[in-house]
Each structure stands twice: as C-alpha cells, then as structure tokens.
Image (cartoon, rainbow, N blue to C red; front, side, top):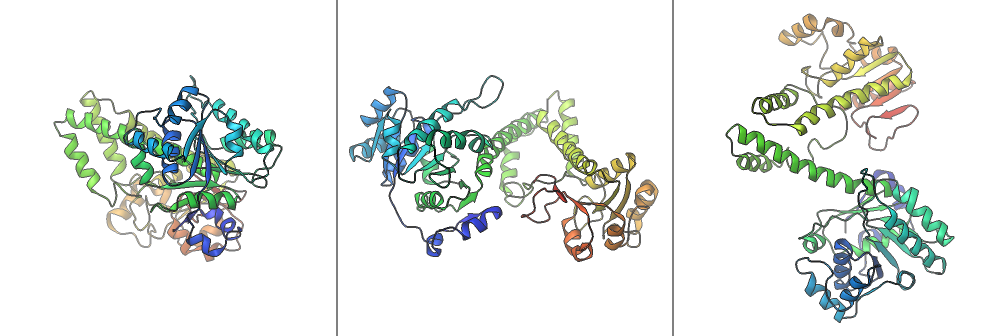
Length: 468
C-alpha cells in the first residue's frame, strides 16, 4: 500500500519503530475494536469492521439500540445494512453493550463515533465526546495494554489537543503517546450510501502525532482499500473534515445560484453545469484549490462582477458571488496587515503582474497591494522580470507610463537592487523568488509569502505565510 505522509511528519514516520517492509507491505492483522455510538457512522463502521473479520463491540447509552443490535437488527435505516448486521451478529463478531469499561478493557482500539451537534449559537457541542473520553480514560487506568483511542466524531481543530487528550490523561493517570495511543480518523460516509462509501473511500485521512503503533494499527485496518492513506497531524485531520463539508456546501450553493441566474436569462442550467463538470483539467480538479493570495487578471474579477450585475437586473440575489469578491478583498487586506505588522517601512514586492509568466497588470492583486502601501506612506520598490520598462513595448508600456507613472518609477531592473533597498520582501511570484534565491542569500529580510515558496516553511519571526 502506498502512503502519503504530510511534510511535517516524514521524519517522525522514518524514525518510528516500524520496520521498513511494514511501510509498504502491511499484514492483515485482526483487531479487537470497540465502537462508541450506535448512530449512522458507528453502526456502519461496526458492521463493516466485523464483516472484515475484526471482533467488534458496539457501545451506546441507549439500551434499546443495544438490544436491537444484539438481536441482529439495525438501529438505523441504511441500504444493505440489515443483512450485514444479521450476518456478523450470527457469526459472533459483533455484539453491543452499555458497559463502556468492559468494552475498552477487552479491546485494542476504541473508535469514537458519538455526535457533536451544533448549539444554538453555532458552537460545537462536545459534551458527548468528553463523557466518552472520561469513560475510556477510566478503563485505561486499570489496563496494562497499549490501547489506541481513535476519534471519528467531527470536531474543530484543537478539540483533540485541548479537550479530549487532557480528559484521557487526567482520568487514566497516564500519558498520551507513551501509555496509550491517540489519533483522529475523519469519516466521509453519506447517509443512504454509507456502506458503499465505506467500501470504496474517495480518500483516507489519518491524523496522528508521534504514535507509530496507533498509526500502524490504522494502516492495517485500511490495508484492503485502494485509496492511498494520507497521514496528517491530528489538527490537520480535524480540519480536513470541515474543509470537505464546507466545500460540498459551497458546490451545492454555487450550482443553485447559477441555476437561478440561468433560468432568469433563459438558459438550461443543467446543460451549463454538465458542460462545466466535463472539464477535468480546470473545473473538477485540484486547479485553483491552493490557499494563497487573491485572484486577478482580465477574466475572473470582471466576469464575476458581470454575473452579479445580471442578477440585479433580473431580481436574482447572488449572495455567493457577492461573497467571492468579498473573500478576494479579504486576502488583499490580510496581505497588507502582514506587511503592517512587521513595523518596517521599506518594502520590496517580488512580482507585479496578476500571475507568473505574463506582463498583464489588469486587476492584479499585487498592483493593488502596491497602491495601498503607497497610500499609507510606505517606501516601495518592485521587481518583476516581465514588467520592466526596458522590456515593455506598445500598449503595455503606454499603460504603465501613462496610467501608472507612480508605479513605473518604483520598478527595479534587478533583484539585487530590490534586495539592497527592502527590509521586507513580499513574494507574489514564486518563480521570480526561486530563480533569484541565490541573490537573496546573506540579506537579513523578513519574508511575507503569498504563494507558498516551499511546503516546509511555516510562519515564524522572519517568515510569514499568508495561509500557513
């Protein structure tokens, strides 16, 4: 099985106690697993794990659910679930109980699938997770085995670190990662297709920090699947679940908003969206889904604005398209705040055009940053190998010299000139920075990165990433 290991965790993986051959060839070990929560995720997970040959104990405070499961009956409605439960209960591989202490003490792994509903103010209700963590911790206190506590409940980043792990350590009297394992395993099961989603996952994400044994157990649990497991930090895995659901909600709202606009303009919205999703290069792909700086150019800003105008003319609200431009403006403000927070006044911009390998300045967010810095009294210098007066001709040169003379006079011919002037370098063009990185060596600069120069870099004293 291939495994994707996030850049921050490659060293932990390589230095773990796993033998080299176990990284690429995982055995088919069977585990004793308890599943907390007999809802959609818990019931489906328990049934599928038992079908795969593991011994499973399902735990719930609801005696009626426990009794139903022990009779071989599903406590929820889900296609193909009834026959699966009936089969594994008869085989003796799945049973249910309300006794959490006994369940944990007789198993190797706890999968926690209890609910985390919204409270009235929109915050997350974590009381069910906290109660289960306390029960698991009390059982771990009495155990001599290394038990792996794996959360599947949807939780905001930091919940494991700030709530779950402290409860486990306090109630068990033991240390996480040393005396018991902790991991986060987000689920991506949809009601109505949950078993199909379990058997053919689009992705497998494992959140683990310095816990090779729990990681090995989870890799073994997923060894049968063709999807490549992606190993992230616990916080990263917690965030993935929210990113997924927010993306799904955004897609639905986008399709609906476009549907209303298309109908108002006499267009079949389904034909339009069918054409949109047929493009696997730009539309249904990783294209554009890389956090960074604002968009610009001759197409995106003006076309979003034109659709909003068409909506107003047709009495169709476009809240999502409105928010797209608001979100873009927010990235520009965020970049400006990063510059202001340095307390420095001599600023160098690397890149001015709206994207690499072009001299197009139309709606360039880097140009907008330059305008705001000038307006706030910063001393500014700019380097872009594609936007130099010595190279520009025709319309582009006329546009820069006649409409943006205050920008034209700030352009530097070499990166050395920029590095000699600036205290802070704002990187808006990754290619320009990397191509001239040797020139910057030896210069003591604060780097503000809007384009992700390198994946291993994280915000620190001399380096600030806009989204990392």
